[in-house]
Every structure is written in structure tokens, then in C-alpha cells.
Length: 435
Ligand code: 5AD
Ligand code: SF4
Image (tube, rainbow, N blue to C red; front, side, top):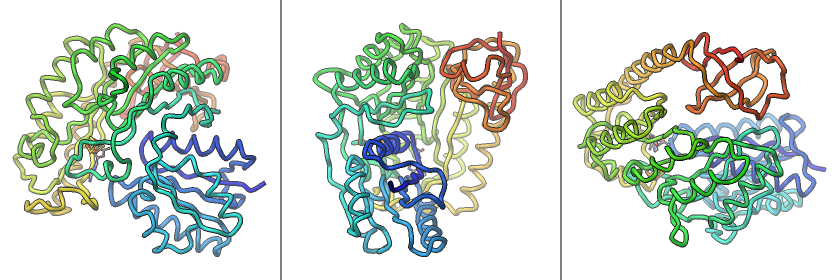
């Protein structure tokens, strides 16, 4: 039977889509391989949120074509496929299939056609398939199950391509979500659930809100931990924080992307909140949940961003003291409203400099935060043997810190909750001992 290799770029939603495709292909008898040489079929599940990601994919296709002299089947899925569709196939005749973000359920058909020598293209908006139960996703080797609750985005932040690649918001039925959670817990033995959506707070299905989804999932037997991604600050409210506070198995770990600390830039970005409204929400979260972990995303070098705007961002980063931060240089994207702004582009050297100042400051904050964890006890969900040192186990705290500790009873702890005491720390991870 033909062998396939799947390569995934980008966010958790792409990881989840890849798991679904792996599950479907295996059901049909195809064999997954990690080896390039062995693979007959390369499936590239792509990200187009920044231009760099798109370049990487184009160069990857070039490498495969050159290295294997046209012998391998290559197909593209995900955001680049949605964004470029037919044009992509015309531009790269070597591609055998192109499947948009809402067409991944057609992977087996695309692969079978490619094996028979024909091409396949689909980037339609298949809503009915999104509502079907997905118990076929490949969960083997995972201790966390991704479950999508809402797909697409209607926010149209002026820099962001996602509304054009993932389409309009579509909430999945609550009963289907709960069935998928039960399948992950009861059949696959996975006790950590991560609920996914471009904006989980927009969830709306037959009068149910995101808070209802969280509560319903939390009340299911065997769910040790629930995480969720991503929240838009404008929709993040006190009711939700109270639901998190009332349920021990909902991690008080909140990713609240701010993007900029300057009101002027937030307005140009179309974010629909001000700096002070955002900071009020951080205060509200910390009042109700003193033991919470907050992370964020920031963009530097948005068109028109001046030194004062950047200092406003730095001021927020220094005062909030995030537990984790993802930061990026602005990247102009097709279709987005920011392309039409009259503001001057920020020179790349200035944007790079701002990014490095920001990241350096965050490293210091994070290192200090990690140091304050030394000597304290945390519960860790064990994920795997450490990749670098198989004598160690690796797991995560509620706050998503990576923790390594002596394996002791070894593999049998994988998937279980254990208590550890933190001994030493780095910027990236914590070293601990089992209690
Ligand atoms: N340029 C740079 N960063 C971007 N992001 C989204 N679009 C862009 C862009 N055009 C970042 C935002 C978002 C994260 C997923 O990616 O910070 O929260
Ligand atoms: Fe992009 Fe804004 Fe939607 Fe997030 S909320 S996916 S940044 S448009």
C-alpha cells in the first residue's frame, strides 16, 4: 500500500486537521511514514498567516521536486491552499492536489486520484462535514486531544488573512463536541482536552455560549484538564472567568492576544478594544483567579507604528508581566485592509530592533517568573519521555510550563497526573523531582 508523509505548519487547528487526515488515510489502508525516502505521497498542511511561512512552503515543494526528480506525489492542504486555490495549481503544475481548510475530509479521494494520474482541487465551504462527528482523528501517541468547537473568523482585524483562509465563523453542535470528548476520554484514554477556535468566545449554537461548552465538557467523567484557544479580548468576559474559577479541571491558563499597547495602532488594526479596556480585563482575571497564567500575542512594526506606540506596547509588557508571549514583525498579507492604509511602512531594521527589545524584555520577565517557581509544588500531566534525554519524563503544568523530571516508574506515568517540586529552571523549561 502507498505510504504518505504529512508535514504540518502553523497553528493547533492545522495540527488537528492533519490528525484528521492521518486518521482517514489509515482507515483506507494507507501507511504513514516519517521517512522522506519511503514516502510515495507528501501532504503539506500549510500556514499563510505571515509571508515567511508561505515562502517556506514554496521552497519545500522545490526541494522535494529536485531531490526526488518528480517521482513523489505532492499535495497541499490548509491555509495556503484556501488562499491560492486554482492559481496555486497553475503556478506549480507539479502539485497533484490542493485542498482548502474546509475540504480536508476529501484527502482520501485526492490521494486516490493522484495515484491514478489525475489532479484534484477543492476549496469549497463544506459546512455539513464540519458538523459530523470526528472520532477518526489520529490520537495515538498524544496525551491531549484537540477538539474544534468553532471554525473561521468574522473579526477581520486589518492585518489578518485568517478570515480569508478559514472562512466565516461556524460553531459546531454542542452534542457533537461532547461525543468527541467522550470518545477521546473513554475510547482513546486521553484526559486532557484542548478546545479550538479562531475565536472561541464567539461560540454560538442554539443559544449555547462558550461558557456553556466549557461547563458541559468540564462535567464529563475522566476529563482531567481543559484548555482553550484563542480568545478575543473584546469578547472575553467575567462570566467566563467565573466558570473557569468554579471548575477545578478548567486550566486557569488564558491566551489573550493584545497585538499592540497603543490605542492609535489598535484602532488601525480594527481590534475593537482600547488599551485600558484590555488592562481592565487582565485585572478582572487576576482578581477572580489569582492563580492564573496569562499569555499574549504582539505585532511590532504595524504601518504607522512610531516610537511612542512601541513604548506603549513595552509599557504593557512590563506592567502585565505575561507568563508567555508570542511576538511577530508585521507581515503584509493579501486581501487584508491594512494594505490600503496610507500610513508609512516601518523599515524592516526598525521593526527587527523593536522585536528584539520586546523579546529580550520578555525573556527576563519569564526567567524571573520561572525562578519564583523553584521549591514550589505543581501538578504535571505527563506527556512523553524527554526527546533529549530518555531517562527523563516530560509533562506540563496547568500553566503550560514544560517540566522534565527523573522517569522513576517510567512510561507507565505517561498520560497521568503527578506532583513534582521544581528544582532548577531555564527560560524554556523547568527541571523537577517527583514528590
Ligand atoms: N503579521 C504579523 N503577525 C500576524 N499575526 C496575524 N497576522 C499577522 C500579520 N499579518 C499574528 C497575530 C495573531 C497570531 C496568530 O499571528 O499576533 O494573534
Ligand atoms: Fe485574525 Fe483577528 Fe480573527 Fe484573530 S480575531 S483570526 S487576529 S482576524
